[in-house]
Amino acid sequence: MPVEESLRSKKARLTRSALHEAAITRVLEDGLACATVATIAADAGVSTRTFFNYFETKEDAIVGLGTEASVDEGLAEDYVNSTAGLDTLAEDTARFVREALLIGSVDPELPARRRRLFALYPELVSKSFDRAEALEEIVAGHVLARLRHLGQEFSSEESAQRSARMLTQLCRVPLSHAGQNIKKAPETVASKGGTKEVFEDSLGLFLKVLDRLR
Image 1 (cartoon, rainbow, N blue to C red):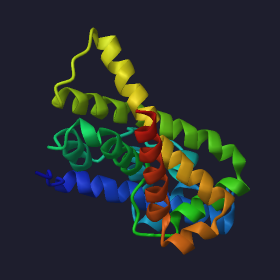
Image 2: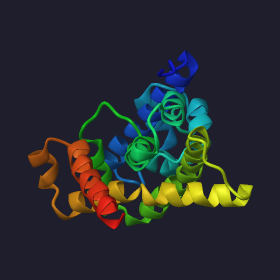
Image 3: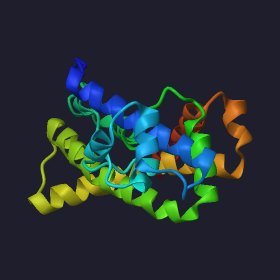
Image 4: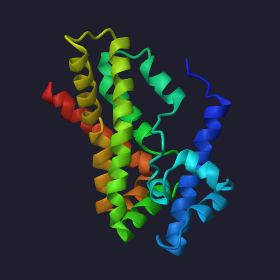
């Protein structure tokens, strides 16, 4: 059964997302040099002290690299304790990886705005990779928990962690593939009906390739 998100967790998630979106908006409007922690915090409706509870620098806020990388509790719990078996593990994990690595937002234009920002300020790309790597380690921990929930056994703890990390990286392929397609042809998002639909196409291809390799 889905785990209900605690009020504290929900508030933290919404504040983090608000700061992230405010940082992107401020930089796109005023430029990276002119955007400040104070203006970003004010735009999000919080104090600078609250800002530093979530991000160490304005650059971290722009890419969403928080002081404590985390994955939504309910999302992780649903994935780990799913009643689905090994036959849908790759699909389930690919969807989990996508949801975990992408910061949720009510703004459907946010992915396009992120790409525009990275094009203007390529120095932020490395920060984006840092965020993804930090989250990927946490995601791999949940993937290992799912494997154990399914009754998988390993020769050692090192083997278990390596296996979970490998599965996580493998199931990140559909997300990367979708991102590359969008980068090459941005109009694909509109024609497909959204970034999630582009991802679903990539996921479908991913599953077909895996099936043919069996």
